[in-house]
Length: 171
Image (cartoon, rainbow, N blue to C red; front, side, top):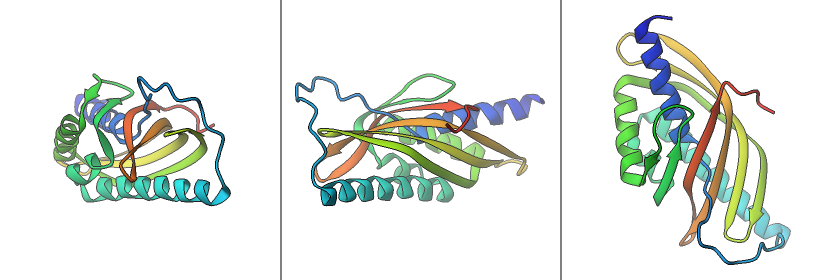
């Protein structure tokens, strides 16, 4: 693999870690709440699906601000490779740098499981991205699994900490 291909792959993997996340709600003393009425669960799942769609749309548009808006202010991103990215502002900056170097030609996620625990939601799933180098258009397909823990921020669900498992089998 050429050095430029290796750099492209590394940047893409950092972006993957930023794009999919999990949150551990620190300091919560609440006991896990049983799932509420079906309508409440459907509303929660719809809200998370909407946030995931906004993430994918931001990737397609190369929009770092729109992407970062789906994260809590104090979010942590743990990419499969590279350092932990701390805070919405840093996530936005990291994505701006990523979009300068590559484009997401295709981006899709598939939720495997969603578990509700009070004011937190744990989502696991798989992803498939086709990324293209901004300089020459060379394409690479990236696949793996992710874990996202969402937390309620006001009336929205936001990502607070993310993790990706590049090259992991979907299930």
